[in-house]
Amino acid sequence: MMPGIAAQRSGVGMESVREYLRAVLDRAAKPFASALLWCHVTPNQVSVMGIALTLVTAALIVDDQLLLAGVMYILAASLDLLDGALARMAKMASRFGAFLDSTADRISEGVVFAAIGYHFASHGQSVDAALAVLALLGSLLVSYTRARAEGLGLQCKVGIMTRAERVLLIALGLMFGLLPEAIYLLVALTAFSAMQRILHTFRQLYPQG
Image (tube, rainbow, N blue to C red; front, side, top):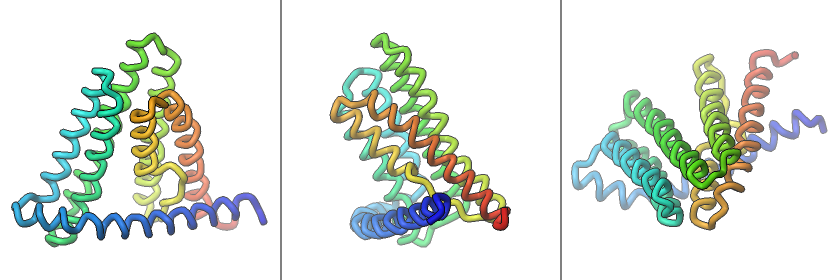
């Protein structure tokens, strides 16, 4: 089997797993979404709350409370799932809501990686601080390549390091004292994921190439 075909099939397989897990998590979120709906909370308000929790996460990282920061980051990410479930349940899905959700994700990644960079710099880990910037660049590239491909009318969900995996890896690094190792992995895996999406887009545009 050709390496490119194997990688493409692997990407499709991973996306199937993600879709299954997303469906499971969506069912688990329904009771919480129902409670928010009863309280007249809107999906956009949930997105804003997610940003607020991410700012708290960044403050905890700066304050060297890494375990609590990891827990808070998971909570903030869970709101990202919850706003979608609420939007579908309340039939309040909108283009602006999708725009706000994506924007909130980029804000969240930016402030968390800035805090991580500060944490490393304040502890004299200048190389790790620089790598945190590269990890942020890789994370943004993974998201950008998908958005740009979809802007061309293409599908581009392949890649081993989507936002969910990035959040989980950073949270585990924070909670278990493995933050430098998590950043090293992110640098490598986000670069690989961005390349996967670039090649996937190229193959869709030039199928005979």
